[in-house]
Image (cartoon, rainbow, N blue to C red; front, top):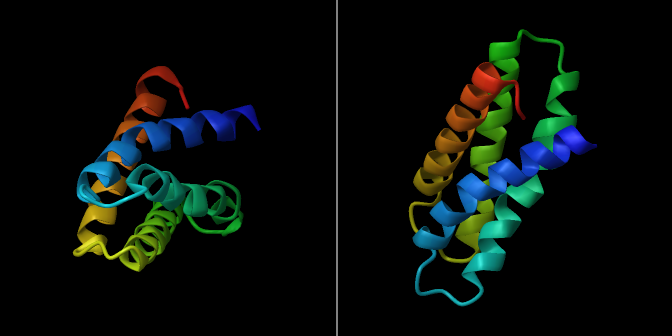
Length: 107
């Protein structure tokens, strides 16, 4: 559980500022931003590793799910170009997360 929490907090640290910026001018933008990856991250972390495919395919499927899920969530709150914003946030998240894992073994 500690590994998941570390990965989740890192994801929030990276993605929330991007979503808050994208949602500027909207009421409750922090809560909307926090909700995006809070909805997708547990599934990405706990469910996608159960898929019996190679690691690169697993990460690709998981990230596609996260982008789509978060884009749908953001569009419910009227964010235009939600797929673009979700793609950007998840790109930063996965690149930083995998880089940290490769360099220092965390998260």
